[in-house]
Image 1 (cartoon, rainbow, N blue to C red):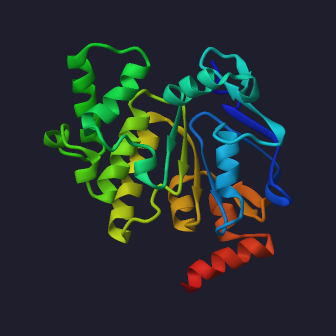
Image 2: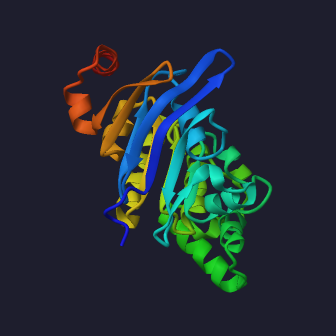
Length: 259
């Protein structure tokens, strides 16, 4: 019913930190089932943009529209704080670079996943635990770790648990801030393979912030390149990375090739 309309529309989004530009006049759309990568060097404004789009940060100018599951278009700025929090527990998800920011470290792995189910009204303990067990398996965590706390998990396991916690309620849009950052290369490769499979199987829409162009190429169909808060170049991921037009993008791509 809504596949012919964008899931998310961002118009003229801007945010300043005093006199410093966080992001400036950024516009784009996300379509159902599409993955968009936002790339750039540290300080380019990509995480600021992600936080403004997801409502985690107030933006100074611009508008974000979201296509609800009932077919109505909602302006994010019109939501109350309670409505925004409910949206983030149901239709949206947010995967942090540091898993500890997206998990409750003092409760079990099962409780981390089950808590989000309870937030949307599920109350049957047996069904919640069964769903949590299923999702641990889907992110390659052994079922016998369900009662263990994330403090006993490796960094890669924590990140996979955070992904399960976000996806268990079947969100339509997931925001990811450097989801493979800080992990060893072999752990990154395993996590990327898992993410690509889950995004494809679930038909998720996602916005992924990354400084790693290989991550962008593997996971996204479209890409936005940012510098100093501004969009320098955008387009289909393979086209932008294989034939960059902007000098800044050319430098980014060449630095990866030389590395």
